[in-house]
Image 1 (cartoon, rainbow, N blue to C red):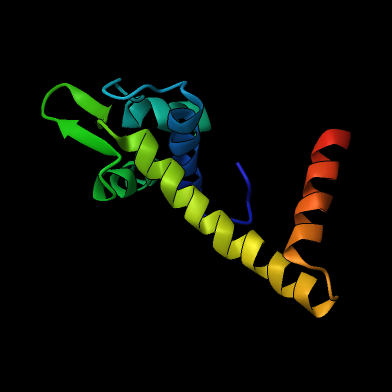
Image 2: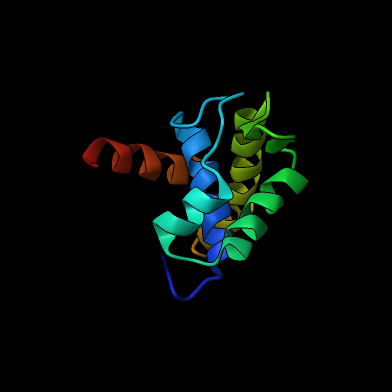
Length: 119
């Protein structure tokens, strides 16, 4: 866990990442609140807060008496949300800086293609 950010947010992000990466497929049960609490050595209320965030977002659904499950379409919603955030946080500032430096979009795209080849 990263001490610079709230633990409940990190719990939610961990589940989101597992869904995006396919480790938690749609309609699959996620770990219980007690499992999160024991694994991360945190208060169950903190784990619950993180999971409830996912419930509020429609990523996870509660099935009374059974547990919490990844909803249908959760992966696509998460990917779309992350793509939008990526565009706002990285692509737009990149384009703004490129324009300041007189770099065209075509030149910028060429730089990205070259970087991908080198990576």
